Image 1 (cartoon, rainbow, N blue to C red):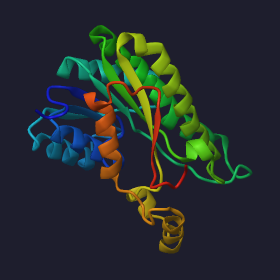
Image 2 (image 1 turned 135 degrees about the vertical axis):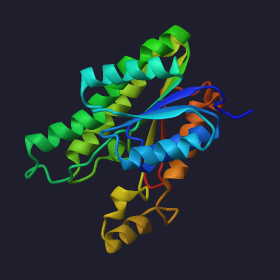
Image 3 (image 1 turned 30 degrees about the horizontal axis):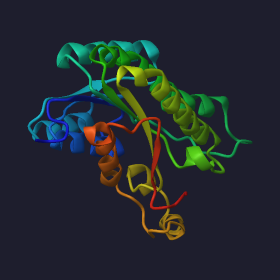
Length: 248
């Protein structure tokens, strides 16, 4: 039997990158997938098709994860379409990197709202289904930067550190109802976003990592699969780094 047979997951920001890799991994293990992104564009339609080809139910939803009312709307639609939610992956995120002296209020607010408030929005909306079932797995995408900080990323680091505190609090709050909450902290993962980094800078990053390479979205997805499945049935309130020992 597949690890997630018959379960339904909601994954935010999953039209590409790490979110899409997680969606594909879950679908390959029998999980129905409802996923969100800002627009129902070609990327979303392609992801929807890729998931459906794996033999599961899949649907993409246009959603502003940073908007509380819009999140409530889209979760209601997902419940109407899928009937229940067993797994939530809060993956939606952006960067607006710059030194604090140059950072605008808009750059601060945008990153905090998309990266951190979205986790509150979706967890609050999805918990209703999980509370009824007295089971569920919540997986929040943090970052090694949320544990160590990084110059030029004070907004991003603050949002990812906030996710860790939220994750641990929810694990304590909902644990008695059979709901687990954990965070993943990826390091230098090769995605579209990191692909825009100049080659010289990318090589310097990789050289600083003990495993001497960047990670792949699939490697993050493997750990997400562990946290989503019953293999991790007694794991809650934890932060698991996927970073090649970049931060220990």
